[in-house]
Length: 296
Ligand SMILES: O=P(O)(O)OC[C@H]1O[C@@H](O)[C@H](O)[C@@H](O)[C@@H]1O
Image (cartoon, rainbow, N blue to C red; front, top):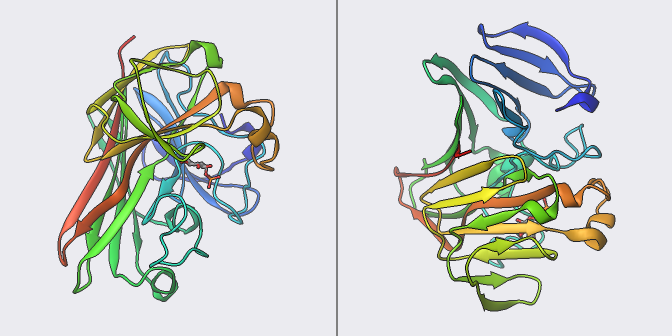
């Protein structure tokens, strides 16, 4: 899992959750309960590892990922928020790609143990610094239920006095045996191809035969995929799209934090709000969620 992160245990927070620090001083929660184990960084509220008992590790992490908070982690589940990809012109195109949630330190709000596992609750709130990037008051909550199933949710609460619009994603990097073993069902019949900047049709299941960067805009609520180890169902809550990304050889080789020979062992299947996004009225909230369940 995170061998090359050299994490040092600091203290037990509950019977199943330990606080650890990395060599660059970032804090991590290490979870191990009767059902599964997981690791989450407070920097970015970034889920970096999840493995249900008896199963293969679900998430892919780059061995060359930054570890000091100078960049988002490469792998796991980056939280893209409050925009997806480059910010729109009205926000400012010089803003960080995929928003600022993944490059900020979050606060641990609570840990609760339940019959199905462990629930971790992290929070990010607006500050002067976030208002310079995005002029809204908000409270963003990330909840992760670590059990035989994995559920992640981000809840956006508008704590300001005027409406806000957000886009975002749970940008999950899945570990795969190889490209040939990947098959994804339930993506719907159309997608926007970011590589050719065109609308295209999807005929049946998606096989990973080439580099791709696609926004599926009419996915089923449940997407099913095989990763060469298991068959997994991804249930998306309140997403309006699913993004599929694999950089393939040349792009991976040009990304300094992406192990250049490991692109065949990953695919991102991202639970996303893209396009027009979601408008959240003052005082209201919106939750985007993803549940992962093993079918076989
Ligand atoms: O390098 P980043 O900012 O983590 O983004 C990785 C990829 O994330 C995907 O969601 C985008 O569709 C791709 O275009 C992008 O390259």
